[in-house]
Length: 241
Ligand SMILES: [Zn+2]
Image (cartoon, rainbow, N blue to C red; front, side, top):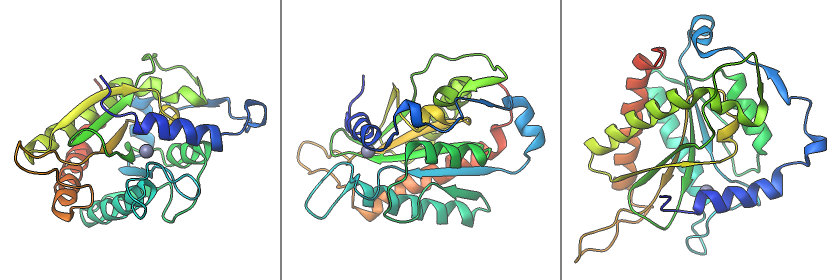
């Protein structure tokens, strides 16, 4: 069950807005790809890609007049980058400013990095805790040529493992986790273990109000969990399922 439609609606709108018509896509429909097992051998660096969803005219969800999803995801990406860097983890981001970045450009940035993990960041006002989405593409065995838009299908198993490690880390800090599968760009294009992290407010008990998305303490719990999971993933990502 998908608790939130934020990612789907927002990205659907963004895709409609940003994605060029099929006929004008760069000639990258079938790019040579490197199988996961080989990638680890030729690319020993551990690189994490952070993809702050939305940006520019694509504001994402509008929580209040002044609180836009595009700003939340960017702020979160910046802070997570700093946290990972402090642990010696190399990070590449798809955007560092409030700019529109096409889905194709995001996919290119991630895939050129030959990343060990790609994290797309969304936020939503619905649900509670963190929603973790992996691609709903059917897993496919590695082939030499993968369609660009479905490159994620070769990484389905690894992405589920990464999602599981993030879920475990969030559980350690008592943040509720909802797992889901969805078709989502640019995630479906990522040729690396990939998870979409959608942050929701933290529902309170019967007598307490929800902790808002902007609560620094709540954000820090999520940041700490993601940092812990991506630090642990450094030890695990090369292991084949
Ligand atoms: Zn979104």
